[in-house]
Image 1 (tube, one colour):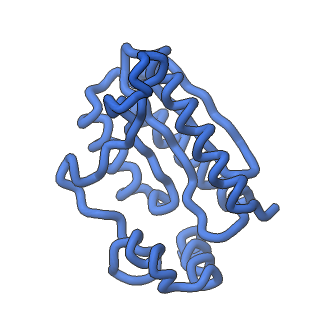
Image 2: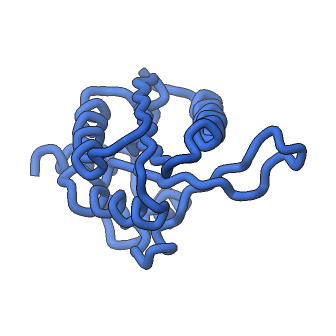
Image 3: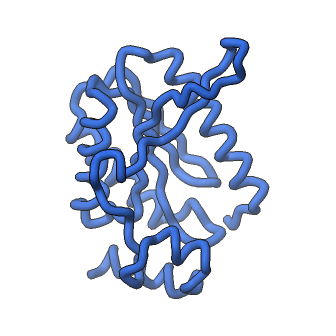
Length: 174
């Protein structure tokens, strides 16, 4: 089922609110947020579920000790939340290892979420932000099709959705 831009934006807001809540509820560890990155308007299909299943398995193997785990299978895309007993930078390096080394890792986004110190000011909520790959010396993620940074191609709409989905399909059947 295709989703609208409004649904996508609402899901991002809900994800940020959940992240804030989980950071407050689980100060004992580091929060990981998994999402599946598929181009186009369909965010939940057989491919996305295969990526999600593979990602959850990889995260469970990489981080066998977890104090919290929540998986959400939504029309706007799969989400997974994990609290692990590592320092954020160590967790980020491990997450990048999964993204870079797993055969479907290019379709996995494993963010390490930290408080950004820019909450509401009244102490009722904290802001959140993902640690960027650059914080641990890792390169930007590359486009599925060419060698440019993915964000550059995404913003410029360099490739069509059909081209990107064909590249996704090649990841499943190399």
